Length: 77
Length: 148
Image (tube, rainbow over the protein chains, first blue to last red):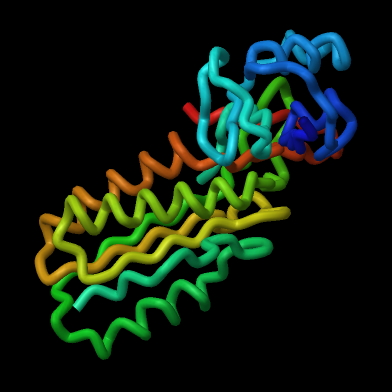
């Protein structure tokens, strides 16, 4: 399936892009993360949470094809 | 009468001015069922880190999710507290040290409610809303802010 992945803050500094679309055969968030870790080797040194369809999700969550976002620690306010 | 409006963006480009804040207070003077307002203003601090001073914070956000979270915080605040109205504004882009980056404004017939509601809302914003602050130093180097 084709998934849009968004990167923010210091994660976007690692990936050198704010957003991309990937055609993936992976089934879970965890599997997608492994794929991204191999694509961007500095990613594993970073602290971030993952959102699917704008909700934070656990690693064992199944991919639905909805938008994924890699979110570094929040620092609003 | 609660002015529960549907999803609206709370983001404003750049600093939130004292004129804007003053005007917001002025607009509530026609709502004479209100007996107490409470206001939180987040201001960018010129922190000194390893001998370098923060000159500004550049804010970015996952805007769709952030607006959804602001909406949930708003719904939850109206459910839990007897508020007449509430307003939240957060900056995006560059806000210099000393300028305002967050403005939360709650109003109620009575005072006790506004103290509790304001703390609830500000803490929820800090914890749940995907906003990211990049601290820009005077020498133009940067680091990513972490909320404490």
